[in-house]
Image (cartoon, rainbow, N blue to C red; front, side, top):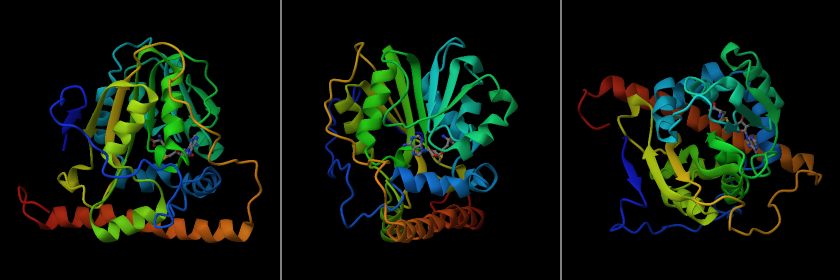
Length: 303
Ligand SMILES: C[S@@+](CC[C@H](N)C(=O)[O-])C[C@H]1O[C@@H](n2cnc3c(N)ncnc32)[C@H](O)[C@@H]1O
């Protein structure tokens, strides 16, 4: 836990991806909800219980503060964008350090944003609907880009990270908090069925390809996991990178992976959605299982 490794400081240790950097889904990893339309409907329902039932098992206030620490929110006048900001749980951590009037929360789900609008500390934030892979901000706009727990739904994560680079000012910092891939077979199965759980090497490669320098990754996790990562974590790491030159990312990409205006077969959609939701249920149970283990196994021993 709290391990920080950096591509800058660990020159002797080459980080070689042990996995393909995949935007599209291999058949073995259907990732039913790594899709904008499916994520939209998923959050249509999940937004009702998100803050009170989902977050306490996966994304606590201590984890949030730990994950935001590398974002270096050192000045109240910084311009910050919180992409996939949802109900504003992470934004509540941001506005402890930055004036709310300088913070924009962007999300594709109006249902999630409706919850953010009800939070008094966020009343001065700008709250807008938008797509993480096509941000409505000018190039060289923000001092900090934050995105917590959203990348797993992006059909083309590399495109979202390229957008993070574009909207930052020269010297600006991106802080992307996201899942980590499980090593235990059953957890791996459900992770692959549900959504994108990147490996640490994938995050680093996406950041470097987008043009970021000084890419660092910090592991995070709920206290009661005692540092265990084998089941994967929905919020398992905080990745940061600095924009070294103004302008757009040097990376060129082809057309978008998902065209949201294209009609979908409602039966196929429903089938995919239900399977994705079933896999998500496994990840509601994992933190409860780990909490029980933490209660039973004597402190100081591995669980
Ligand atoms: C797990 S929630 C995280 C919310 C918030 N950042 C937090 O820390 O609690 C994921 C959010 O990402 C949003 N999302 C998913 N895909 C998106 C996309 N392509 N563009 C913008 N938001 C997206 C969802 O609507 C949802 O609100």
